[in-house]
Length: 495
Image 1: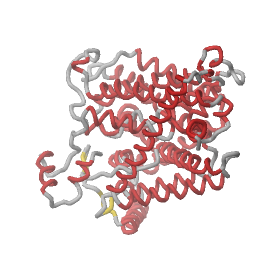
Image 2: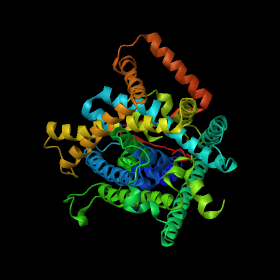
Image 3: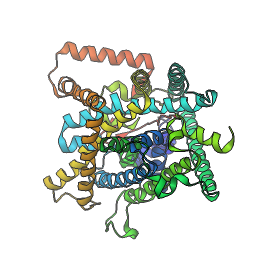
Image 4: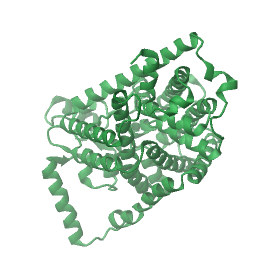
């Protein structure tokens, strides 16, 4: 949500609120369409470029088995990400609802499928992402203090937990401070990447490109294995995570579509245009960052580091929109969509996420967590893209402001099938646990959502718990109607 939308909602009696009510035409404050092309590109780039690029290179290299294959993985993952984003662009303007793939899966395949997407996102994807980001931050903070060995696991997890608690407190306390913290982390990431790429170019100019020469780049340090290569794509996909975030705020796009041919650039809509600009830019940055890494260290040195950018620096420098969409459809408890009466921050959702992320910190190592979330993410990406084909068959005459060739979703689904099959083969336990957690949502859906005639005592218990949560967190239910609500806060994070 943009700052303008936040400011309009802070006080119910302000002139800004009155203007907002006039704009919506019925006493409601609607999602104002004020995200233009530049902002859309900023959302995509800002949500993709995160801590992933500082942790995934090791996982990609370890499973790719050579520098050359690792670089190919980064490029192919960028191309597949762009194809997936184009498929989502068509869905985004055909089903113009905020909520992204949750909204599309629910509308195309029904409430159960949509609920499972939401269930797995709330229980697995978002907490696991945050856990990996927190552990990455801890690694980069502690690695310089342990130059000859890895930092102790207990120290890493303790520092990660402290960071999560601190950020949760900041997010609960103030939208302004949350935004400032997010800006600081974003600037730090971009500056670090710019420095890495520049120093890599300097290394190449000095002739330090041994591992980039074809004869050396494709020299394997272990036997190639198709299952491991599939896992390298999962590791790389973690760094590209966030490419679909623009679809979560489709209702806010300025002129998300106009009539015209997708191939004629003068008529390109903001949604695909932002994709064409942003994802190639991110792919360029990621590929050149990894090229820079191997100009300063061998694959073995890279694999021996849990903080690749720190090792690189030492070598060269000498030293919550988904919650609200789900609650709006009745698929999540109302409490998770409530906001603080004064601060306008989603405290219950933030506390729930913090608790589930802290639990994730106790489960496994960082790279296993990446495989875990990557498999589940790609599972639903494929289901969503398959929904695009189903919708074409089921409703061929449905108005589609953006209509891409079906060859693109077919290519995406072929890659998707390869990735899931061989990932399941290589990591059956990790992937199986993810599937099992997803399936636990089936009875929850039928008991909590599908079952209309619940006993009065059950409804009374839920109401009492909701009321207790409201009093404990000092929150109220935001004024909501279909596709409309009056206040939002974007949580900040390390990513």
